[in-house]
Image 1 (spheres, rainbow, N blue to C red):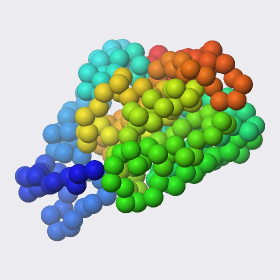
Image 2: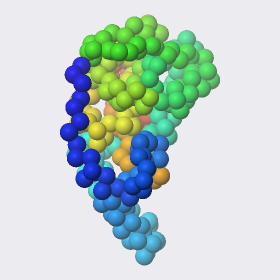
Image 3: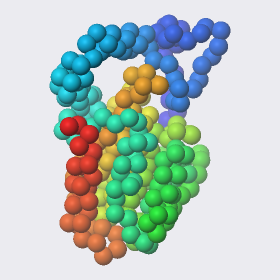
Amino acid sequence: MAAPTLSLPLPALAEQFLLRRDMTFLNHGSFGACPRPVFDTFQQWQRTLESQPVEFLGRRLPDLLRQARAQLATFVGALADDLVFVPNVTYALNIVARSIALQPGDEVLGITHEYGAIERTWRYVCLQRGATYVNQPVELPVATYDEIVEQIWRGVTPRTRVILLSHITSPTALVMPVAEICRRARAAGILSVIDGAHAPGQIDLNLAELGACYVHSSIKVMNRFSMSIAKARTCNPAKVSGNRSSSHASRQTRAIASTLRLAKR
């Protein structure tokens, strides 16, 4: 894996933010700032809302959200009808985690580089359902994507029902080979759930080509007021772990996709 080179005009980029110049701000993940053009546009929309709240929220908002989904679909490589806005990625992943019909003995496979809140969500859901959360180690350093894939796949067993994977990991900033993991998961009849919180704007995306059952991503409008999307597609794995049929998996993903789409109405 080749080391990335830094060729950004950092002083020019710094001018795009409202941050104080006497400090170096590094935490753009938890409570980051947004660029000046984004901030200005955000304030314009606030003023439009405040000038006529009933008209904006009661009459204009549904069409504006549809237009936004269509533009966003082009940006992330997805169908607009497969996208729904949610408060944040953790919220979206909770919808999926609590909707999958895990059974006693099922396993959910994550890795040791997952975001803490997401890992705790799956551990809680597994505990409630009698399933097991498997925290598969991915040791560093790694030189190739193949090494990562093989390390992750060592955690797969005949009981694995779901694979959870970050597109870009929160604690270690690794870009994960999600397309290959999703391909293997489909072939094995395993549902794939991708935490894509850090991917939009950092890497080129084509969500349709990833092949994941559920993808959850963030587009930071303002970090305190983030806009996140959940993408759900109907998966039809070749089989499902244990004795479950592929039709059960397909029904499961359709049901969760329908749940997510209710938020668009």
